Length: 94
Image (cartoon, rainbow, N blue to C red; front, side):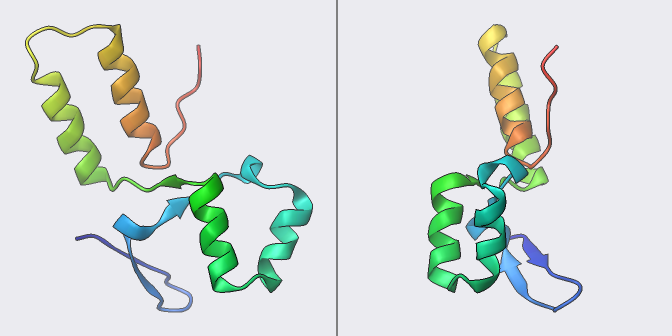
């Protein structure tokens, strides 16, 4: 299990239950409304518009397992990119 700890408040979370909510997932008004939203409203919004957080070690394990297959294809590249995005990183389109 991996823990996320908010260094300003000391709040402890588990990565397995966290979601990443990108800036463009909400309108400006929705972002402002988050301050007055209940915990259950924020949680529902995260599940609806965010994406699950994949911890780095789990992502690396998944990539290693995928690349251990006998032959790679373009589908492998997209799958690896998806795993990297799941850690919260951005991959630019070329």
